[in-house]
Amino acid sequence: MQKKVFQLLVDNTSGVLSRISGLFSRRGYNIESITAGVTADPRFTRITIVTSGDDEILEQIEKQLAKLVDIRDIKELKPEESVYRELVLIKVKAAADKRPGVIAVADVFRAKIIDVSPESLIIELTGNQSKIDAFIGLLDGYEILELARTGIAGLGRGIENVTIL
Image 1 (spheres, rainbow, N blue to C red):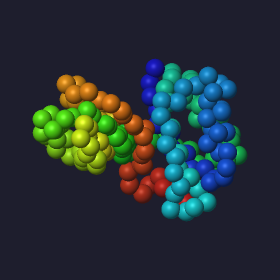
Image 2: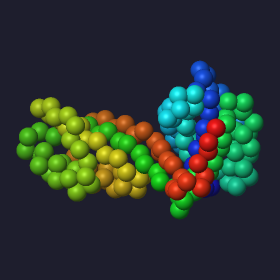
Image 3: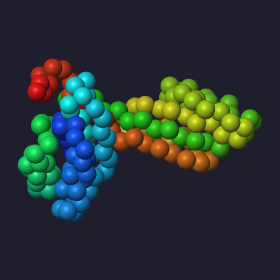
Image 4: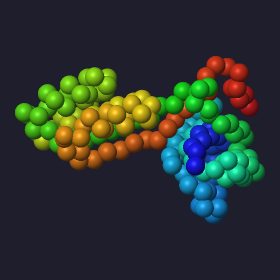
């Protein structure tokens, strides 16, 4: 099993995300993460999907996606030719005496403390998946109350593969 990251440029219409996720569920394909947002041109939405499977399954996913009417462009974002980022928000239980340790770990990773309450902190971190996984691993000694990850957003490097519609 291998992972692939697909970047889709789709019409910004209602139901497009539902049609794409429906394709995955009907065929039994797995979505590991999916992110979507409008582009600089409000007529289009960029969707980044991380999925996994063997070569045959991944090829079928790409072919099936390309058949959908709403999809204007589909690209594989290869790790060596792309930039991936993910956002995580983590609520950590931290009374006043525990905060310096949590803040020190956050500082090392250039994370931001975005909320402080008497019993907890909320930390924001942006980076690649391995950076976020490493950060979460270092918080092992603290109680993580809640965690929200956005999934990967990515773009290809350079201007060679920019789609202009």
